[in-house]
Image (cartoon, rainbow, N blue to C red; front, top):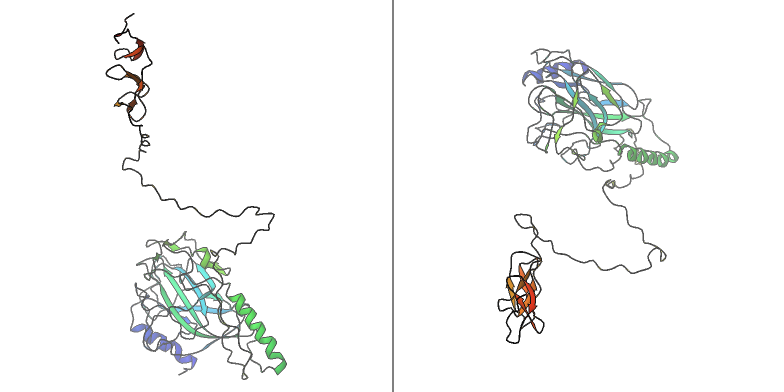
Length: 389
């Protein structure tokens, strides 16, 4: 059902009166004015996107937006929570889901929806918030879309607000035309090319709905991450901008992929089919390796060698290598001073203490014995006794 414009403000005010005193989007006219509420999205994200509820996508008024012409973003309600940061985004889905891809066309950092230090008042039907101008970029193909306004408040609980509205994007003149048969093919190619360009727009920033990303503490104004900011950016007020915390990298609003060209309500004849939607490769994807020429690779590559990791000891001290085995028949002993010469107890051998605390005795040369007191070889008489100097 469509309502005359004169009735829309009354509908918005009626809807607001049954909700807590936050704010909702007044222009563009959102979906489901019969039961819209001004509450933030639930902390677990279960009503994302567009505050899911019964008849969430009921059209009250379709918003027609010619490419490049100024459009107004305005609100009703006075609980502005000190302002914050907002975004305006589009999706080609007429009934968006959690998997919808939202593309940012405008970002407002600070002062949205107001630069007032707290709330403007407590009238849920009141006005006084800021109004903001935006335009549909030239790269957006004509057709039907869902527009989203998202807001991250400065003061209060860490929340995300979201209202959605039906939008028909038209040519810059705002008029629709029947196209001759010969023009339809070139138009379809143009729409496909612009849809591809639209896919380069950043994904909508999402936080505070159980996705691992949160805006900073109450009293701070969100600095929208660079990968979600876009090129159409308004800076309002003088608040210091603070980045979000948590796992906020990548594209939380959905996979980065090429948005499908939207349907065109003004064309009464079937146009050429749009090319199938295909994902854009992730920047992290490595390019295919190039095969080297024979001159670049003169030798065959060696097979990979698997090496088992060595677990460190609790004290992080590397243990000395085990001592090599001792041949049979060779006498050994223990010692405490590496490098010190030692005698076999019977004097018939001599050795040196090694790093493992072991001494391997070598037979004393004929006519000599090892003096245990001196640790050196000395002459022995015929009876084998030591000859003292």
